Image 1 (cartoon, rainbow, N blue to C red):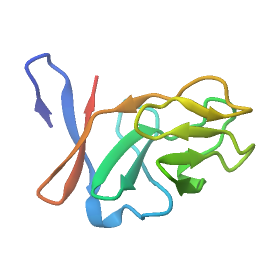
Image 2 (tube, one colour):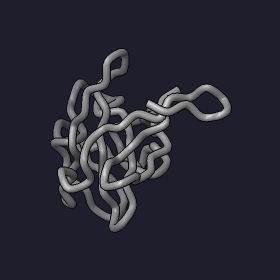
Image 3 (spheres, rainbow, N blue to C red):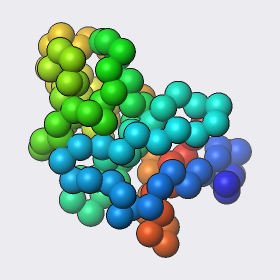
Image 4 (spheres, rainbow, N blue to C red):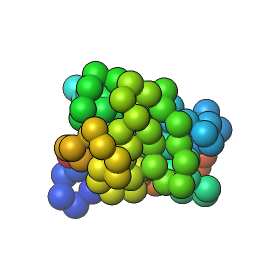
Amino acid sequence: MDKDLNGAAWRALCPASEVPAACGKRVEVDGWEPLAVFRLGDEYRVTVDTCSHGNASLCEGEVSNGEVECPFHAGRFDIRTGAVTAFPAQEPICVYEAELRDGMVYARLE
């Protein structure tokens, strides 16, 4: 774990090679709710894994055009911003800054 100047922790989440293109990878970090790691082309994004509308894993949803669709009720979220893009979801999801270092996906958790 590295810390930045503001004290936020950068945590290694998983090897980039383990993140599928069409869905996310669920990652658990001590002290945090489950996270979802997504690959959008050459970029990696990290969000909470639990849908804000229901208790569903977003990693089990389909990813298309930068959005993930909840597998329970088909609500959608922008993976880059967490914004809701389709009803019935109404609350955005948390997103975390992510980067690739030496083949590992890291997230800035604060």
